[in-house]
Image 1 (tube, helix red, strand yellow):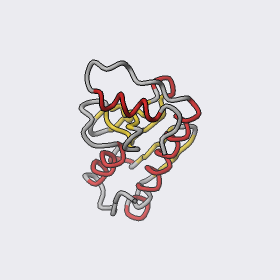
Image 2: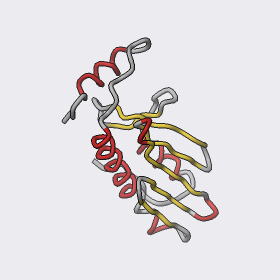
Image 3: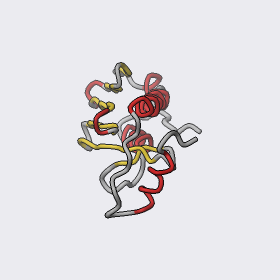
Image 4: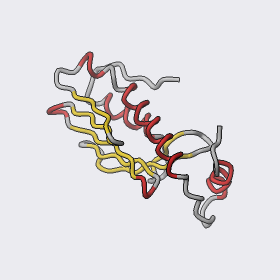
Length: 136
């Protein structure tokens, strides 16, 4: 469900351009939802370990690292002051994601098309034959 401030954040997201900035997610709540997202991403990329010869997936201290050797390294980390998740990709460069509390997804701040999990899996599918699918 929506945590403290969730309803007002949802109102801001629906208000469109020119609306006041959303209330900042309380830090403990940010850590909870961001850590859940990093865990979900780690689970979603687990099939890489069955297919790739060089693979190292590590999630520690708010930083998820997916190293596929010569295919590149993706780094996805929490940015607590901004209440964002940032990603660095060897293929598409840097991106920033913000929580859409109403939908429960992390949306890219550039245009908001698509969300973090779908972006990551789509990009990894271009370099790996692993069966990567979004969970429930």
